[in-house]
Length: 194
Image (cartoon, rainbow, N blue to C red):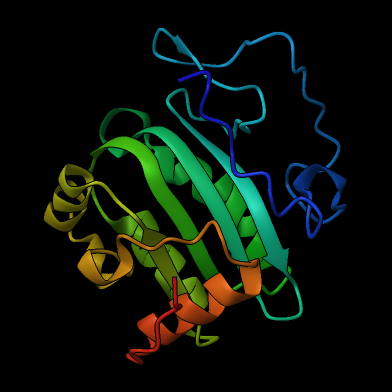
């Protein structure tokens, strides 16, 4: 787990801890001491804590002009016992909403498990963005994670599943990933060429 770093090739375009509007502005990272854990496993120190004990985030890119954010997650998403969605919504998303961010791309390939509860925070988040023609998209969810999200009825509020999986997003600039996701969410079939 400690070898899995957040994606860093977009740092020439955006760095969350240097963005005064970011909820992670001013964070300092110790590259030599590993202190954050998911259960008994240390994780790379570049991941950001937002109140959950088992789920961490990295804001990879934000475009205030276009109104979108790209975030990467790692860990176990546990709404059942730990109410992770509440922490994510209150500590990260709400501050972005105030700045006009209404389209969210969450890269979930390192979300190892999902334990759902009710869908009220997802519904709130959906209502917050849908008035502004926004959307929420989970990219590259693992099959068992996708199944649990579906069982929790998140598909009514979040775009995820087959169409949003197996996206090779790393070779592209953030604006191309956003364009792809926007096309997929809006029912257009345009895909990036790999």
